[in-house]
Image (tube, rainbow, N blue to C red; front, side, top):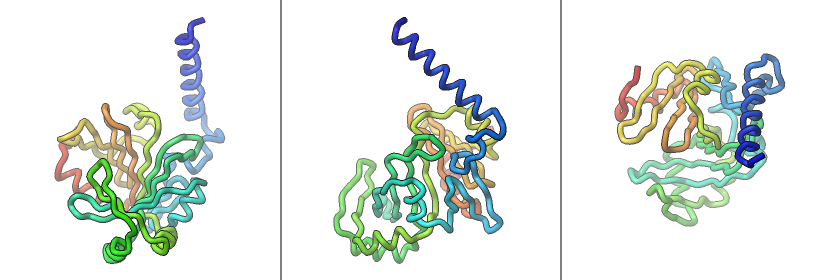
Amino acid sequence: MEWRTILGIAVAGLVAIVVGILATPKTPMEKRTDLPWKITVHADGSSEVFGLTLGHSTLADAIRRVGEPPEITLFVSPEGGKTVEAFFEEVKLGGIRAKMVVTASIGQQQIEEMYQRGLRISKSSSGNRKVDLHPDDLALVKQTAIAGITYLPRHDLDAETVTRLFGTPARRIQEKEKPIVHWLYPEKGLDIALSSEEKDILQYVMPARFGQLLEPLEASGTPLE
């Protein structure tokens, strides 16, 4: 039997297993709370995903959850905006492999002070400047609440899968400059960016702050029916 046939059978079998797990109620997979589509919204406007509550859980909590140390960096955009992010190269939550970026909830004044204490500045391929933080600031960041999570699954998603797992979006917005469509779930604080050319991205924010994510999309994108 040719290797292509063997590979095809293996892939088909894996797909059947995954579909069966998702479709069957009360399976161990369905009971898990660390899956990308398991989002719990709380009365205070926060949300919980991957076992982490945005606005409450800290970066240290995320590190314990993932089980691997991240790369923590202060980024400065070409426009001058500053954020502190923790990048996890290898995440396996709910048995699904992905990359993850956790944004720290730090005020701009505090970020500016961290920037001034930075040890080294370099430039990334995207044009952002990367600042290596002082060890004291690294320790402080780990105790800071999580503002948002960007989740990058290793495998591409399609419209059917997204609808089945996350439900029908409240809105969809097409980016004008790139072949990216944002599936928006404001009640969950979730933006799923699907692209035919780039990696799909799931971005989680507190539902109470979803407007901060939506505003730039509305300004630069085209609504879809």
